Image (cartoon, rainbow, N blue to C red; front, side, top):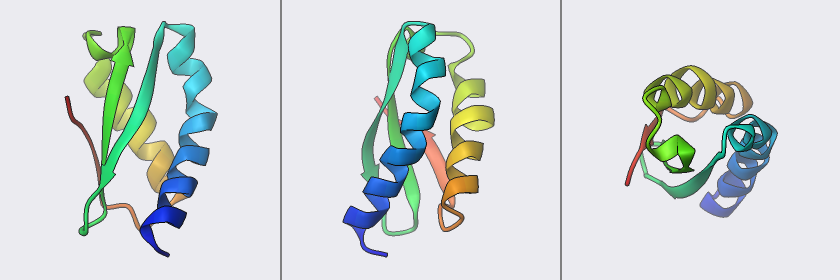
Length: 79
């Protein structure tokens, strides 16, 4: 799977999670995918300053992406 195909799959998976983030006034943006299959995401809106953003990233987004795309090793938040 090339980077473009992977990006499309990640966006599809993120689209299924976005309504939950948007309900709280936030969203998520794909920044990069590294060679070692680390997905870098940026939390935006209310999600960027929420005290629960770490839990959202790990328990929600990372688990969802890894279930949809098992090749992903890690999901991290970047600024």
